[in-house]
Image 1 (cartoon, rainbow, N blue to C red):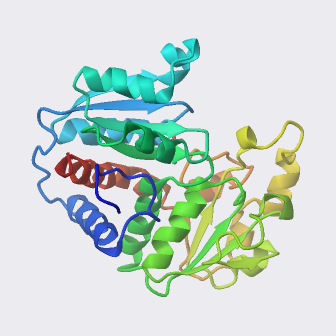
Image 2 (cartoon, rainbow, N blue to C red; image 1 turned 135 degrees about the vertical axis):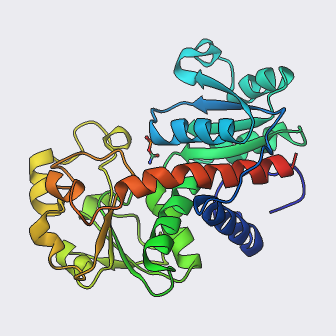
Length: 305
Ligand code: CP
């Protein structure tokens, strides 16, 4: 990272020491380390331009757990609809002594532009999911889930399957897992695969079965209908037939394979209901790790104020 205010805009922008610190601190907190109250006296604003359950709730719970006052603002019902820019909304809340901003935005690079616009203001921004570019805390959650299940990520065979093209989760998970030495492959319908040259850290598989072969982790993704032009999204039934993870398909993976999904998941579209509820899923572990990961991130951001 460059000098100036500390933000978490992407995992790609972290150097190895910063990434390592966040990962290890989140792991320690997940193991029960006392979090203390590093956000005491600080205020955090959750600013979400897109729907969220997990990210918004766990940032709020994490922030409260380590001492912050939390303000939730739905940007679709704020003065943004009257034409106020995101930067001016942040300046407004900052003038009320809000220091930490957790932001979800639909536009690519919206948060990099915001951080640049705000310059040296004494505040910190955490990316809570931006367009299809990155969802850094979800990437940390996914890597930590695998690390805790297998005792490490190095050499673990991870298949990420579904709508890769529109997935910020896939990009952040690939980034985190590549840093930690996992072996990555991606697969999905041709229309939902990223452009040539994108996500070079992962091998591409044209067929679901090829991606599953020997995979120790099968990470399923939702079709991001909200990012696909009207009429371009696949039919749910046809998608399930071709790309839905069923018990029969899962049998092609490693015998000890586990199933992950960042949520929200669509039952019997990308994942069969019995797989989502089955003994191999780690979905609720992923959700639970949202709290220690976000505590670690907020603690780190507060230390830079
Ligand atoms: N995984 C994730 O970002 O979920 P939410 O959209 O519910 O925050």
